[in-house]
Amino acid sequence: QVQLVESGGGLVQTGGSLNLTCAASTSGRAFGSYAMAWFRQAPGKDREFVAAMSWGLDTTYYTDSVKGRFTISRDNYKKVLYLQMTRLKPEETAVYYCAARPTIGIFKTAADFDIWGQGTQVTVSS
Image 1: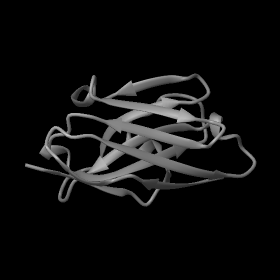
Image 2: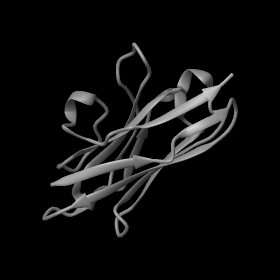
Image 3: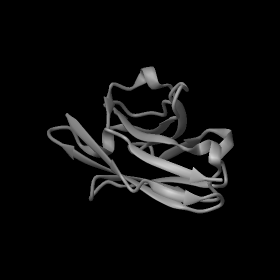
Image 4: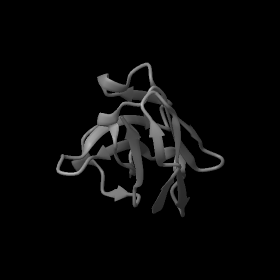
């Protein structure tokens, strides 16, 4: 099983950068065998896929709107998932969540995940 805790959110001006982290506590199953992803949810909006990473296969996938600006990465030894965000836009203001699935692969639908962190607020001022 795995428990997830996000951190690193805050207030940033349009065009600025933030680095998010998702710290995992696991028992039994190795963290590297979990499919991981970042989602975000703005008030009144559906939860939106941002980026995903299969640690077992070491592959990544991004939604088109963040390609070239966001980078998902991981450290299996430290059991931490990262999201580096640059050139942030006001419409990207949201609560950002990390999610885990105990299978190897790439998943980009919220319904595919049932393990979630509590979220961290990112606010991009205009």
